Image 1 (cartoon, rainbow, N blue to C red):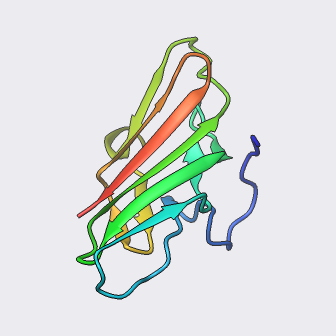
Image 2: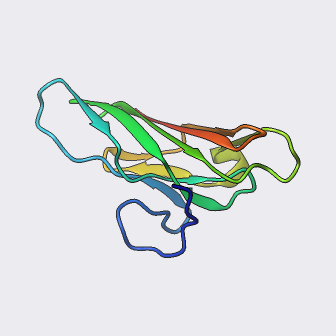
Image 3: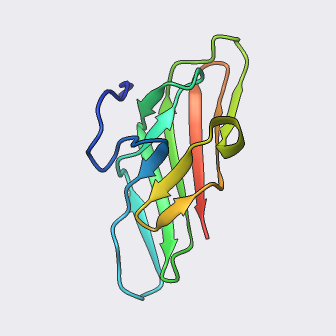
Length: 119
């Protein structure tokens, strides 16, 4: 399910310099595990793509980890691409809050994993 992101406005898309990962709110009752939510990520060349799968754990105090995976366009260099806030200027925005603590690795074959840490 490889698609380039073309528009803005929905909960699972990139919006104005922010990677957006959806996660519903919940009461103070331990940890919440969310699977297969909408997640925008980058391909190996910095273009936008939608995740094929996603998984998140969010604690009642608002900390969490969001992980998205997809098969995307590999980097034109033929090498793995390492993306993060420092290299892109993008923050990862979730309903648990925005964070600059994220990284994405796109392998030379186009296997991508995005991890966003919310503190």
